[in-house]
Image (cartoon, rainbow, N blue to C red; front, side, top):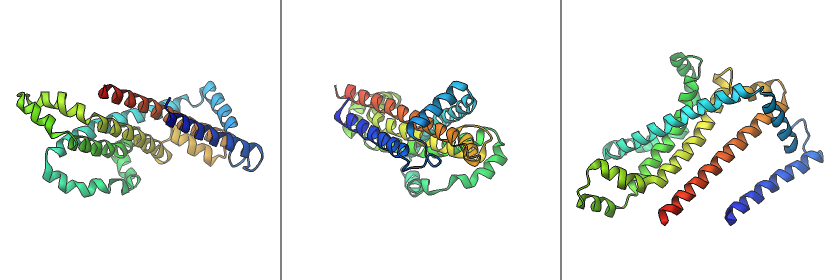
Length: 249
């Protein structure tokens, strides 16, 4: 692990220990926020009992569908827009202000169109993640060295071989960043949508626990999300770093 990794670990561990001390000392009331060790125990019991398995499975399934859709659509749209400079100039202002749009105002329309199932939630998650992938695809294609494209033409490479052997490898770091952001945004969109558009899932379960003053379940599920996303981000970061080291070699 690098020094930056150790520093992050020390900071997070210190913050958790400080919160534990404040909660145990009564500075933070347990009715407001239980100690991290208490949250961990509640989470273990919740997972061991299987009471949240259905909600967790549904949310992860919705996130997976939203991630796949946002990455594929974002990549294809990015490639298409990059090939049409006039269209890109027209769309640039909309892409720059995309995340200022409150997507949840459209949920009544989505429910009318898709019903009360998982479809409108997946659509919301996809809307959150797709533009992050699209923008990073454009950035990656913009930063392909022209000398590589000229070399491909000199060697008589057709467009397909040029795309597979020159453009994609050169744009890979930006595409990977876009995929990471899409995953994060899809988690946000799906779980937030479940608060208001679903009768199941982690988001709904947290909202239900909040409304019924069930702090143990609420904080346990919140801790589960934090740990899951942190581990996933760490895995993706490690994978990306290894790919970049291999490219440099």
